[in-house]
Length: 459
Image (cartoon, rainbow, N blue to C red; front, side, top):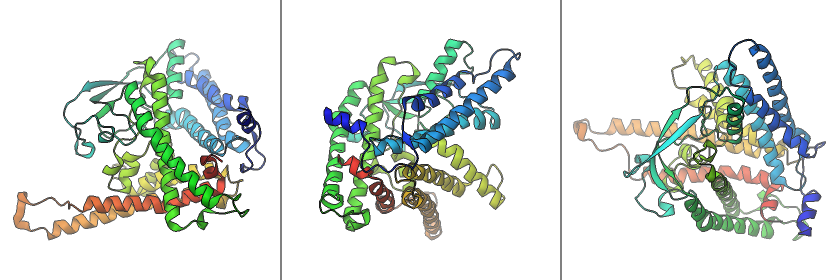
């Protein structure tokens, strides 16, 4: 216990925060979300127009203060006892600030939109889901989701509330629900809980506990063991007194460490998601108890880089990337190519989303590498590389399918065989795994420099 208290009191020797930042204080952590909450309470319109302009002005001032304080968090403070929490502080600051400006300025004034509650109703289903999400009828954990609890199959129907709260009690509840729901799940103002299908699952508390105890925790244990072994045997400077970098590892060990770090993140997100779902389950049917699936497809069903980011990874930050990446990227492509608003702008959409993700994660890395820009570019290289890979794979796919259509015998008509080949999925899986592992080395390299790998290894 004494060792834990000491570790929380004194800074980690390997922590490299931005020069000039100070340890995070309770007031600095409390004020941004609190002021944001007060502004949210005033967001729904009040009946009558007598004081609407004054209320709007006061609300905007609160929003500006909250956004400023969110953005200031990672530039003025750090968490002295944890590299990982300092990294998370940067994500919280950026995400919170961007979300405030989205709610009170982007969505409100550009789109005249205020989030409305969405209530979800579930009806049991016996048929398997659609082709992309098809699964065998089994209670086995791995027959349903990777790192998701087994659960009953249901068809989900979403019904949007027509009105907004007007009473102070209704406003207070509405604002609390919206602020506490990071994903925005249960509101129209979100893209984070997209499952791409109405056919989903409703795990119980026992299902989630089963998932945690029998699958998530063992997976975390395996990842931790690999990370700790590689760090102690290859990267620990205490072994021979020489500071070692990620590039000192043999290439196969770089790939193994990269895979272990990625799997650790995936399982850690699943663990946190399930724990919060269990904690808030007694509130059912309150919207705060609604936790849609974190991952929407099994890892071994993914056959492209696009599949991985659309179905195989969480979408916790997708609203941020949509507003500040996808929409601007589409606008730029349409301006450069003279496309009309109703024409797709897929290149701008993909690059905009991934470049915004690159900037967010690189800034988080910047806060734990001593403010050295060059050491924080690994995340930018990783996400930008993934965006380029998606564009490349889509181009290759179109060329291959076009070639197959031309070479298919015209006489086959409606009885022509499918354009798909048995080896497409095999090539696709090898492709996306290779891209993520090879490209993910940039991510892992930055985490080694920042001391995150050392912290994750328990040192």
